[in-house]
Length: 408
Ligand SMILES: *Cc1c(COP(=O)(O)O)cnc(C)c1O
Image (tube, rainbow, N blue to C red; front, top):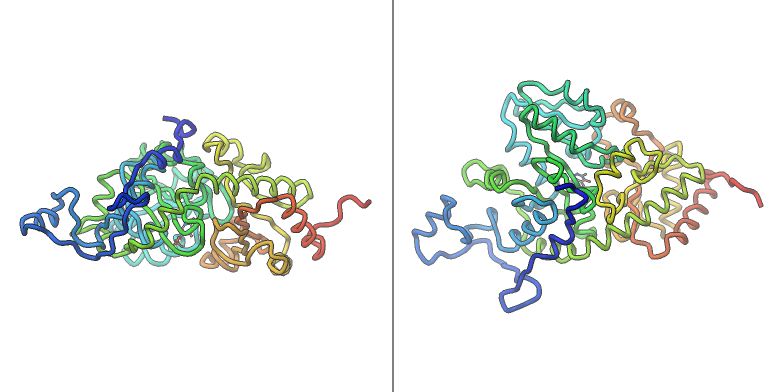
């Protein structure tokens, strides 16, 4: 099935859950352990042979399974496993797929924490990562060796908004018999990587999916076989490393998921509006919805148009000083918060070089085009985006980032 014929929001909507007392939301099970009516069933559950029985909440809990089911429906995978954070989803996947001596080929423009884990921690277990420009398929293929087990990328990268051509990367992964793992955090609903051949799709639920900046969370969406491997009581990384989400939290994330489709449309509409206006004003804007974006064509063919090009954009204002000055002024005018993270109702902005990507050494930042004056915006759900635009433009003029283009 082509990605653009797959509508993830409809799949989520088609799931029907009833609470224990006929509630319109599933009941929250507030237990870490579960009773068995017979000792034999407990043994079978340990062996993984008792479908529908719960053992211990680090392994499974009813609410985590509900949330996982909804997210698997969203990504079009057989199954999913939720985790207490995005990193709590990413790190077990890599440790499950790789053993000592194995290698990873990864995009070099990825979330700072993922980069730090691959670069500084995985070598302790003799797992080596080659960081490449993911938009150059020949470079990606050249980095694959007989020891490579994983090809890793973000659909739309953090913070540079590079686009990974998932379909062609999936073909490459198949050809070399390795797993394609995609972090889809920036593009929920817009892109369904598993429908384009990705083996494992990961989200930080902390961002757009939960959308209220009140918790961290993560999910791994994949085949039933791989999810079972992650949860295996003897050698499953998700089971044994213990990044389990609490049931109360998964209940609140499931409720927020109900409005994701409406929120994504508004995030995309607003970001596209500002990106077009600011580019016309002469600013250096990066947004996948702009024709000037190097992967605009590729991304246009990847997305489910209904949900747009996403809520993330970057603007380069020339220097770190100007970036800081502008962000402080915008915060004073209540246009958003100077904060990391993304996917909130309110616009969030930060300078990635000194914050979320500070794990990446300065010379490497420069090489990948991560400049000092870069501001990453997560555009909010503002009702009147023209009004926001006018107010932001005033801030930019006041500090000299934007020259008056037309004198009256
Ligand atoms: C935030 C983020 C993560 C990490 O998620 P946490 O929930 O903070 O652990 C991973 N990947 C991307 C693209 C992110 O934006």
